[in-house]
Image 1 (cartoon, one colour):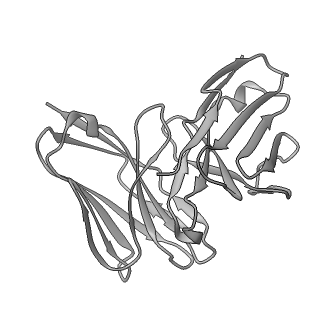
Image 2: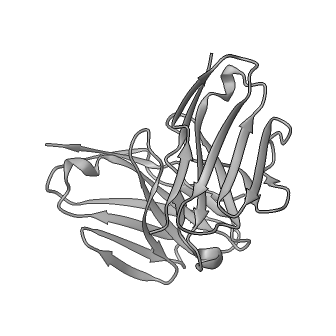
Length: 109
Length: 118
């Protein structure tokens, strides 16, 4: 079966750095997405990785290792507004998007 | 970026009635739109893929006669929850791929519609 694993919940301190991991087992791979979803709102796009390595975009960076079936989202200089759920999603060989359950990130002052 | 608008944001209805949710791509044409359902503290669940001018493709376990999808134009897809029951209460979200990005493009989501069936 297809499976995406990410921690259910994480807590971090304002101003700090947090890394949210995502591992996947899918039938084929055509890219990995990270989305941010605030409570009661729709997801918004953060990043897309299809090649191995680190993609940096401001305070957010996303890393991919296809051989390990592993990705992480790195958030630096955490702000209170970063409190949200972070969804990892993988496009499989049929270009179907498989979603993880999301990681709820709690930022404390 | 591309804008997808969803309406209504909130809807409360009585059990047995039908509810229609609209999803519009405001500044681009979307030949394909996706409908998701999300229960509290759970991930997005794809319900169906809506294709302009043709029948929607439903995911396994989703009743096509209960969740009617119409994609009559390149900018509008509608989801109608027929004979709604309390267990249909959920957050319904539509999305469309950014134009020109093919199968690997990012998705743009509507604001979501929270349905509560009494």
